[in-house]
Length: 311
Image 1 (cartoon, rainbow, N blue to C red):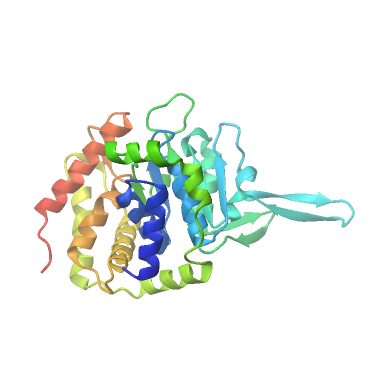
Image 2: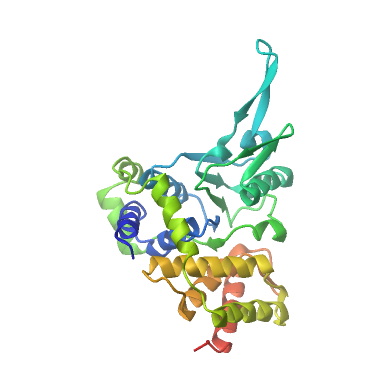
């Protein structure tokens, strides 16, 4: 791993104690120019993760609390008429920050959800016939509560497909939680952070990820994984071509984090579950998030175990 990325990971692990793998996945999404969906309960550290990353990268940060009465204009911005100038002036919304935490995204109406997710995909916003480019780099970390269902609007499968990665933070291990209780609180840790990278360096690292080589045999391996999700008898909805592109990009970013300029089969296998878990629909899955995710992860693992690895 490059020294600057190792330092970034180390500092982020100091504020999100005991969550090394989650920190690693966040860095993968950042380097791969993707977005993250976290399904977890309140108080686990989702906001801390997003704020810590923004501070360490010296990037702008906004948190949007999604509610049933949130409007698309509350996210994207609005054109306000200025009588003195006799013209409209665009007032940008929080989506114009580099790192955006969309908290409890499933509490907003489908119309508002769609406005955010389209902006994520296009990386631009159109208001009153004018197009405004979003910040670069641009990372959305969306969360949804897997426990509460009253007053929520589940994201449709077509919208879930726009997220590069999905994972759970989960409760900290006993040792890590004891350290949190003994020594510090999240807010104090955040205040101690200082930037280790800047915007230009992040953009440079993203460009370097694009140069990571992936052999044709590994592209065929990714294709076979996709095809097996589509033909598996226990999977109702398989992976889309967008999922394949995401798996390729995430594998390149993971290889880059590991200090390599080429992808190996283990990179693809390591990224398969976080890239695919939110995109697949099991025939047996009920409405419980935890049960659904466990079933899907087990099916993905089964596919990986039964599929020969290219040599």
